[in-house]
Structure formats: C-alpha cells, structure tokens
Length: 303
Image (cartoon, rainbow, N blue to C red):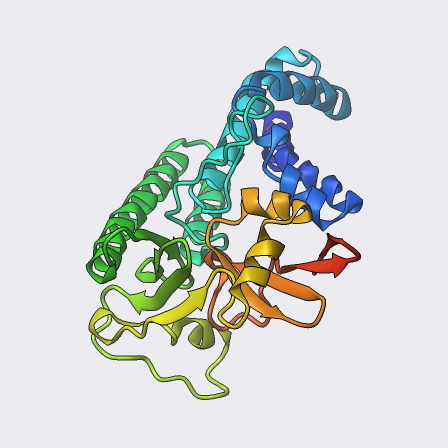
C-alpha cells in the first residue's frame, strides 16, 4: 500500500514535467505546456513508462503491473483537474493541438484545494476506511458541478449585454465560485465586466484589508456592473496594430490567445495580452508579448 500511494502521488505530478519546455523560451512553454504529457491518447503509454520507472525506484516486488492501475488513474486525475480550468489542455496531442477547457474553475481555487486537503487528512486518520475518499471525491465533483451552474448563469448575464453578431465568454475568478469576468466581443473590440452573481452591494476595500479582500472587492453586483472597452488592434493606429498581430512571429500567440487585446505601443513595438488572464488585484499581466519592427519584418519580444 505505501508503494502504491507513493506511485500515485508521483504519477499525478508527472504531467507537469513539461515545464522543461520553458528552458527553450517562453513561447516554447506556451506551445508545449499541457501538451503531449497531458494527452488522453498517450495516457496508456505514459502510465506504462511511469509504472516501470516507479517500480524500480520504489522497489515494488510485483513489478510495474502492480503500479500500472494507480499510475494511470493518477495521470487521468491530473488531466481532469486541468480540463476544468480555461488555460486549455491538448488532450488529443500529438495528433491535434486543439485545447480543451471547460472553464468552470480558476487556476488556483482555494475551495477546490481545500476539499482535497481535508479529504487527504481524513483518509490519513481513517486509513482503514474508504469512505473519507468517497466522500471527498463526491464533494469535489459536486463543487465543480455547482461551478458549472454558476458559469451558465454568468453566460446568461453576458448575453444580455451582447450586441448583434457578438460572441460571449465568461472566465472564473478568485476567491469564490460567484466571481466571474464577463466578455462580449467582436472582431474589433471586447467589452468586459467583473461581477459577483449573488452580491447585492459592492464590497469596499481599503489598504490593509489583506490579499483576499483585495482580489475579491472588484467584483460588483450584476446590476452595478461596469463594462470596460478594449480593442484588438488599438484605437490610434489600428492598421499598424493589425499588421503586428498578423505578423509571422505572432503566429504561436494567435493560436493560444482566446481573447486577444491591444496593450500599448511605442515607436517600434505593439503589445498584446490575452484578457482571459486579466485578474483584478494581480500585480502583473501574464503572457504579454510584443511584435517589434526589425527592418522590413517583425520579431517577437517576450515578456
């Protein structure tokens, strides 16, 4: 049993070994993170390789066959945990770079993690019983189902703001399943609002209230939503922004960004961000890239 627990723990973390792609540069990380190591198609192969390696490391007397089942389930659990976020997971790699994402859960969800931690503690205490694990898994699935219901509500609110021909999207936010950012977009612009689906009054924040309060306060009641406008290519020189966005070095970002927006320019460079990663209270915006003029062409400027 201890060997199987150790094997499950290590196998569950194994898909994120793709972080090594970051050593080749930030764009390489974007292209490869949640790629082949997160593939459902390759899962049986990864489980076989990992169970063989872990059987050697853990000195399992019965060999890799004893660890294969727990290893496969652990990898599947990791993939499932990534699928419920909106980053995108290439579950069909290497045959497709399509990124699946249900988009119910923020990348760091304290409630989701809390259920797991409490479940693990309960399992350690009542280690002879399977009921703590069954109960924790039931709560976890129920919580994600509840988040899915909130996502549908958020989509309904966003749809009420949409104009003809516009697309709507919603992104989960911390620190509660009721916090969402709503997006209404067309080919030239986005309008977005940070809302809390159940709040009736805005939550005030003053310096010193703490980090949790800082990231929670920007989400307003639905009837008080403030819609902010962002353009895709800029407002002053849209032609230049469009040319930068469509330049060859930006091709990897065009495949990755789900809600691309112009984020400033200087004499040589035009910057872009993916608004799905816009989180109020966060100090920096991740995945901000620029296309810079270099002679007759363009080059990509990473963060």
